[in-house]
Length: 151
Image (cartoon, rainbow, N blue to C red):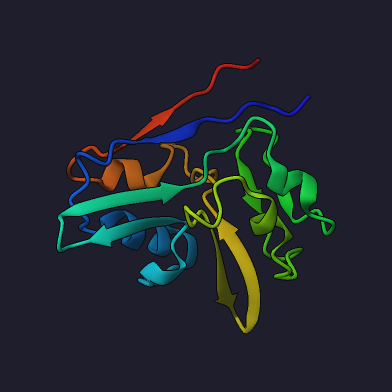
């Protein structure tokens, strides 16, 4: 049985498109401010004032996990978070092709990590005891962390 994970709930009505979640994500995961490699992506339509945060749904039965021949998509035994181990990822994109949210919602992102192309996705800040940083940093409470009950 695959362990259950929490997930982020998004209320796009509250999102102002400020991008603080993207900045915080890259600072936490990579130590640099590079929103283009964030594990959360805010689709921004400034003309119509519509902003839609996209983030991994942490599926109960993750297709990305099942599709990865390299076993780079992992499930954290402690938190249940689905994440990509960049040391194992070869950048093939099988996880992105299998994801039911892609390509409409860019929840898996290809990025350059020290000269290697790898995929990244939200891991619920699994190494942070307080939970996902984007939830804490959002000034409009557009993001909420929810614990999913086991099946």
